[in-house]
Length: 411
Image 1 (cartoon, rainbow, N blue to C red):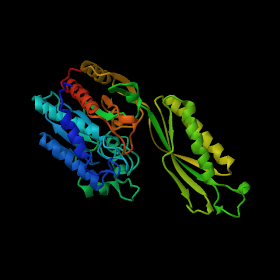
Image 2 (tube, one colour):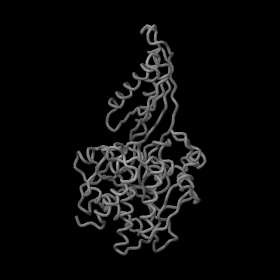
Image 3 (cartoon, helix red, strand yellow):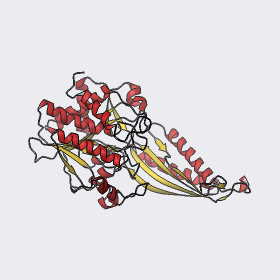
Image 4 (cartoon, rainbow, N blue to C red):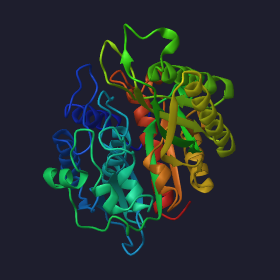
C-alpha cells in the first residue's frame, strides 16, 4: 500500500510498547498508575519529545504532547487514547490509538507539513477502570463528568488512593484538568468486536457509542449450616443471585440486536464450603445504542432481581454505579472519516461502538469522531487480542488524512 504513514515504524512502536508490562500469555498488564503504567508513559513522552513535541501533564495525570501549528493561538486538534490495560489485557486496546496518533505526528515531520491548528496527542488517565473504578476518569474530569477531588480521592481495589499514586509515579501534573481548549478530537481504536472482520470491512466509521448503565446488586439471605438445614427451609443468597445472572443473560438475548447484559464480578459471603451463602454482591452492565430501549432493559432488570430474590426468600438492593447515554459523534467529522477511507479505496462501513471510550466524554465538549480497525476474532480484553499490520496502517492513514483536513480548516 502507498500510504502517507510508515506501517513498519508504527508496528515497531506497538511491539516495543508491548514489552512494558507484558502479560503471561502474550498480552499486556499495565494497570493504571502502577510502575508499568509509569514506564509506558515515560516511553511515550520520550518518543514525543524526539518528534519535537512539548509535553504537559494536568492535575489528573492526563499527558498531552503538543506539535506547534502555523497559528498557535488556535485551539489544538487532539488525537488520543490510553496506555493502561485490563489485568489480562491485549497489546492494542487503547495503545493502538495512542501510537497511531504518534505515527501521524512523525509522518507530518517526514513530509515537512505544519498544520494551521496546533496538534496534540493525549494519553488519558485510567480509561479501563480495572484498578480504579469507574473508567474514563481522566477524560471525565476534563469534561466535567467527575470533579477533580472525587477522582483524586478514588481508592483502588488494592487500597491505593489515586492522587497518591499519581504523585508516586511522577504524573501529578499542574496544568488545569478542566480548562483545556480543543478544536476537535479524533481517536483510532481496534473494534473490540467481530463485525468488521466477519463482514469483510477494513475501516469502521464510528457514528457514536452505545449508552451504558452499571449497577451493583446486593442479595441478602440467611447464613446457615450446609448439613442440618433442609433444602426447603433455606434462604440461599447465591441461588437467588444465580437465578438473577441467568435471567439477565436471557434478557440480553430476548431484547436482541445490540443489547448487551453482563455480570462481571460476583462476591459470596461468608466464603465457606459448609455455610449456605448469606450475602452475594455482584455487578451488572447494561448496554444499548437506543436510550429508550436501555430504559426498558433497566426496568426489566429491576423486576427480575426482585422476583428472583422473593422466590428464594431473600431480599435484594440495587445501587446505580455509573452511566452515560447513547452518544452520537459529530456528523461532519464522521463524514470526513468516511470520505477519507473511501478516497484511499478502503472498504468501510458505519458502526456504533459497543464499548466506552474517552471519545464518548470528549464528544460532550468538542466535535468528535473515531476510526475503527478490525481485531482478529473480535477478541479484546484478553491476552489473545490481535490485529494485523496492514489494518493498523490503514487506520493510521485514515487518521492522518482526517487530522490534516480538520487541522487545516478544510473540513
